[in-house]
Image (tube, rainbow, N blue to C red; front, top):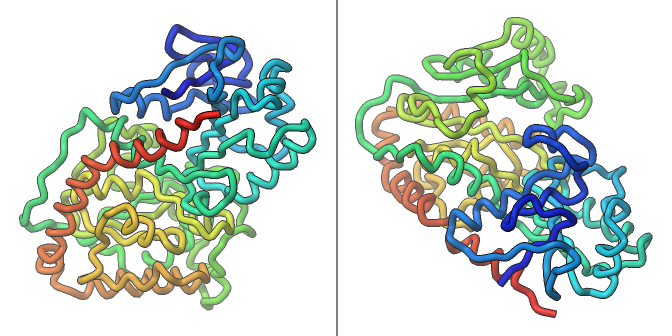
Length: 390
């Protein structure tokens, strides 16, 4: 039995997010320092029928986990320094451990180094924590663990929307390519596809009005390598935003009900992932952007980190290797990987897309069935890891 312990209990079952200021509303946690949030892993456990218990830190049985779910990891934050003395004391005595739960893809090795240094600072054993990350590289880093949070997230939040059967009906469009938030690397690849005509007869969007703190100089793709690309990007951004399903950015980010036309009316999805370089970690970060293709039965090409397809294959998914040149997935250099992805998309577009799609159908059916089934065995592995004994 897993026990989670908290400084404050919100109710008999769930605790108030550890380290967060008291009195915050549900929408405030992610925007209020230190940005610790509710542990959505518990939602997955409950949905799967898994058993766990909760208690205060004072009443926690030996072997309990003190969960700290991070909305965003802050290297300047001393997470252990924010913990109460009784929590630190129990960590020093090895009576409890900290479960850092992070659904983002930041480099887990860099975070592990920071947490280890904080353990030294607070005279804590270095094995007093486990850092759960959505970056596949976590499994090769000490005191870290990979868990495909976004696969579970989509499965849960979209649980009331049914699966669409895979059919052999013709589709009017070639590709679907969706971009809700502007990032410089995303603008680079979309301007390249747009200029080369790959996006003709396709459903695609690019919301230049929705931006984050993304610096142009941090673009992992060297657009200077291609003469004219800088001007091509500037022109593309100046003429935006571009919509294929309306301008409502909030609706685009609401995964409870998904516009299935974007998956059923085109032959192939250009899955433009959250990260292209994944913080120089060497790992992959796969989000609902790709998992939607699994649920709604659409072939895909991933514009993302090296090894993304390899990670999906390791999970049991199929990646249409018999009809798609997926060699791009092995290319470490970011710019060269993008050129290989574009070449793959150009090769697909040149084919009889309906006949091409029919060859994808066995993999589509397999992926959809696996997406339905995968939650239990993958979650069971994490449960086993958390069910440690003193």
